[in-house]
Image (cartoon, rainbow, N blue to C red; front, side, top):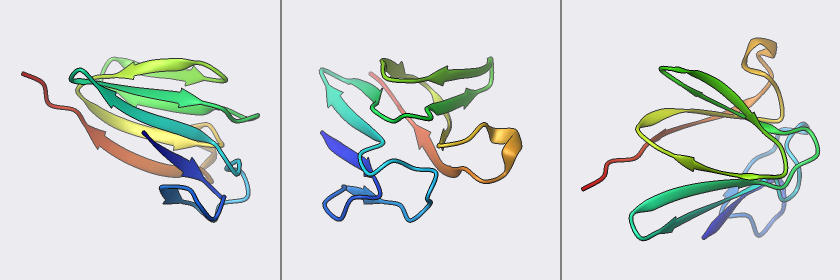
Length: 88
């Protein structure tokens, strides 16, 4: 597991003030990737089918997409993480 946020010990450190100190955690277990949002504002995951807001819950990441931390994608202020999960 690794974390993403503004904290000095985050696995991915972000300097965006809209991102929480401990914004989210990524876990890869048994070939499945999970994102758990622990922030106040939330995280938006955008994939080809659409987008979903995650706030204080966990979701599986599949395929490829973008993770917008701390703001809706239309606001143009979010930190963006691109991901691609390839399976067996």
